[in-house]
Length: 405
Image (cartoon, rainbow, N blue to C red; front, side):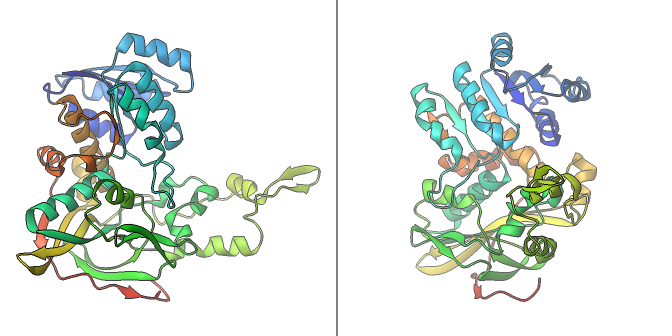
């Protein structure tokens, strides 16, 4: 059993705590640390009747001395990072200082050109210390890549193509200002070339130039466009035997109409202008006074994620679909969170369990894709994760953008 330190207190932390504290085979003690200790105390009280001991602490990862003092008291074996992405490198260095294994949920500052997330800059540091760091242990990429590999291993002799899809899994409510919206997929997809893997190498296509229209179980027929997503990094780095990989998701044009108008009016400029003796950039002014467009306060309806894996079986072409789908209202009623957060929590808790049992043990920085896929899927199933594997029609890709979606 391990001592676990979780940095960050949010709805995913809530769900992860509930899972990990229900089984004494993995953790002897879990400390939940955040800048808002009161939030941590609420969760401690919520799970006080579970067998694994929970402690709480106020933590500021920017305060090096205070963090080191906390580490000397807690002495964690595993550090779970649920802080904001910009703090990822600091938390990873905290794990290195402590000599603890590390796990997080997001591939940070992914670059299309070199297919490298920021976490991998510390690969040699973790390797030298014999520590394991797992990056992006969430629905995307960990679960989807595990589904793809499991489907390929069990249903195909040779894999030629993987077409990943996500539906109704992103919410604009997470975007807090106009600057963040400008960097979101919903805005950048109209002007940024989409990257994919073609014949084993990175390739780019024109924005919104490739789309598919498919019926997804429990969701219905959806049109999805090829967009940028760091999950392609996992395939290129860890599953090079899959020569062609694309990521598809619905694209909501209505979210960008107002932004396009603001750009035409010069209001998105970051060059300061002087108004009555005060200098301010137009976009900074908008960040202060303008609400971010939001489709809704909560994700509703069905959400789904999965992959179409195509290749050869017994000398004949075959396409297999792996898909996880769930209704958000039902998930919220049962688990207190939406489908995306629930799947993320299941993946992260599963990853922590695998670190605790050292089934995920390899010095360096990796994603779940570096390990056998059924390790994660099996442990998630025990906590309530459901998915289907079924034969499917091959993917037909349409070229060109519709006028509306």
